[in-house]
Image (tube, rainbow, N blue to C red; front, side, top):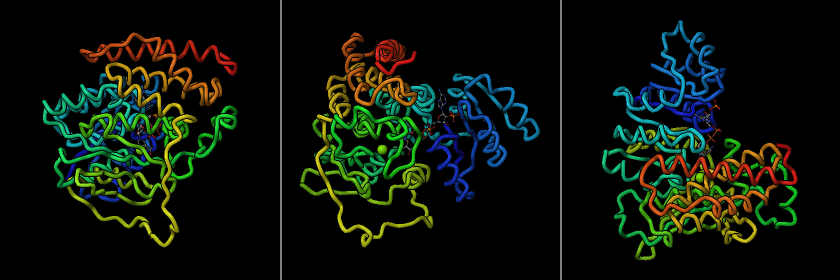
Length: 390
Ligand code: NDP
Ligand code: MG
């Protein structure tokens, strides 16, 4: 029996994690749930899964949640500090980090500092401060199990392998809804269109990141830190069917791939149950349904975010943190039709040029400062967009 803290329980990953929990009541128990502002769903989840405590980080929702759960004797907390506290409780065995964006960093770090097992979906944590997070994990004996499907695939391919025998990892990308499109088309696309992902149903931010290929850029950086890779060991290939979730090539030329249908419940379940595999009755891949599995190079010229992210990864220091902050601001602006699709890359690039480079961020505070400064610049640039109505 594992007792879980599910951070971001109202999101796409969080709700799917609760489906996995509901299907395996003898294996998992919910100790903590957290949401930001979706109080209605958080209350419903708390009544159903009966956690010891819930955290609603948006303080304006605190009273409503508190009153709704008073009869159930569920503890209710609010604010980010509560989140960093509850993950350290002795009663928590596994922390699922499924908050979106930089907002997930402090709770992930707190769980790692407490030596917890962390099932990590919140890729932004590793993009922003991967070096710090992995160093702390090694020091404190915390285990980080990836939930992101590509990294779960790589993690599964590495079972029983010697890490020093990896030649490279090959991250697969679906290509998103605009695969094959060129700038003359992309210049006019709107959020409603970009939100239609062909293979995966996910939260809004990562769906836009998938359309711009920033998601794959963030995943390169995530892979670098998770698996201790050099930049030149990380490759990306477009595979529109999303059946191969990623591959590892070893020094003898042998390649291992992990496959399955595109359904996040599988990597979520794997991360929660690790090192065990547990049974389920979900649909399986039938190769007769696929006449072809195809592969093509990623178009770094059209989807410039991929090139910009690679450069930020190679530059290191606070560059990935700045990249991430600018991207969060601009994706948010794009979702509100305040900047254009292609403008996002221009503005991320300008933000990277504007924020002073720090080669060796010394502390969490350095990352917080770089994040805040990048957000200020990115917002300034967004306001200059023709579409802007700020
Ligand atoms: P969603 O937007 O669907 O959910 C985000 C969750 O985080 C919600 O519970 C939300 O609460 C909470 N949240 C939002 N802002 C804050 C904040 N400031 N403080 C605390 N909690 C907050 O995102 P996804 O589930 O799609 O993604 C979660 C993470 O997993 C992301 O990092 C993403 O990149 C990663 N991931 C997601 C995949 C997917 O299939 N969805 C696949 C691979 C990785 P509320 O609902 O109350 O706003
Ligand atoms: Mg992914």
